[in-house]
Image (cartoon, rainbow, N blue to C red; front, side, top):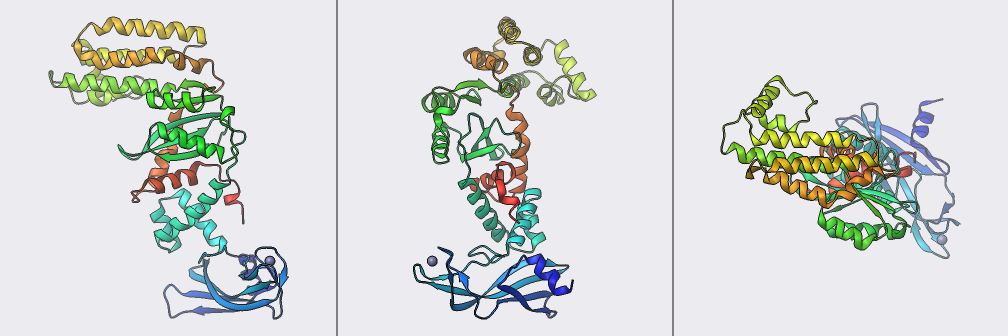
Length: 414
Ligand SMILES: [Zn+2]
């Protein structure tokens, strides 16, 4: 195999196209390898609309950036004809190594996409020696195309939750197909309210999905979401994710701590100790701080003990046991509330749990009981890191899709 064949193989070019010349430009740094492709004289080309073999009408020269050849930047130049189809008129033909309108070869774009999945966009762009804006254009094109072709005909169980594109700002609601083990994200949309559910419904309908088929929904306890679900998917059973119950009490404990810290001096290690779960590696300092709170009869300690008891509910082996344990948990917590008005945040949390008791208990009855949004937080964190530096909800959504949506053939097309 000679050097020319190696280059042709790497490009995936097929007749009538062939490599006619190559030239290393050493006046530039990095050096540039220029490959010139051409078609045999008199070749026929397929009309891009109907495929009919047509004579070339005229030619224009185009250039594409290709993958580096060792350390050299590589460019392909070719004279691309327009066909003159009797039915469709004069049209520019498609070349096999690049998509229409792109200044890069397909292979270059595939590598760029793979890098963008693995590292921040800024770093991937530097690695490919292109501007970040051009890299985003490539990503948007392929992700948009793949998402447009997503088929949701089989979708029957979804979980959704909101996440912020940066801490506390610009919420995005993400919908997950509970039957997909990998790449489960099927839809993401700006906002965190009722309108996100109806946007999901619209998306579902334009992607072959049937709203009436949605039998299971897992979500949090937000009244807006629940109202929207009743309206949009009236037949679906709703399960509250256990993760959200824990989150609710964690916040309540923290609110009690903040209020109490204004009245009593507390060791600074308390803040992290009460947010952590008991078995999860409390530092010596944190453990000592908690013991001190408990000994001192502080209400932060009471709130924390209530939260810790959730764990006992969580491990109930059956629905029956879970029902009993949850009632016991509520009754026990209510008894403690009398200890002082500082426990009010805990009271609010308990009221919320009582209100959603049935939906919380459904996790013991649902076939999707192991679905936990918590597991998806890693995906959202990764997307935030990849899109870092781009303060825009759309870039965050595009990155979530790139990392976690079923994009099908996107990475197998070469
Ligand atoms: Zn035609």
